[in-house]
Amino acid sequence: MKILVTNTFKRSMKKLHSSQQLKLDEAIRQIQNNPYIGGPKLGDLLGVHVYKFFIFNQLILLAYLYNEQDNELTLLAFAPHENFYRDLKKQIKGREYIF
Image 1 (tube, rainbow, N blue to C red):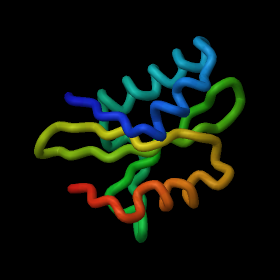
Image 2: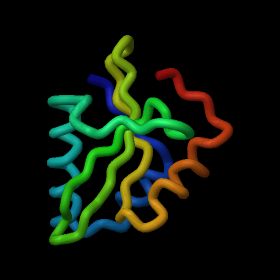
Image 3: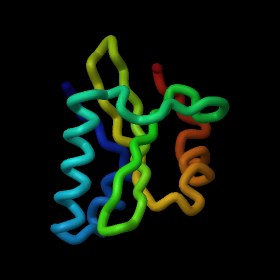
């Protein structure tokens, strides 16, 4: 499976400590093993899946796209729940993704 990463995702990753990075890597492996593990979104975020996991008692949401035809996983963003969906809509607005 090919994994693509957006610049937003890369910037967020740089801010993590090594122990937090391990938890994120574990979540990404879970998604790789089962790309439909995250809940599918509707409306403006149609085609986006969101996987929820914890990093030291804090709920983190990880948004991604899965292209079954090309077997590609695009990691869009991850953050705590506060304003997550609003920021995600801004990020993907104006971009065309193939679902």
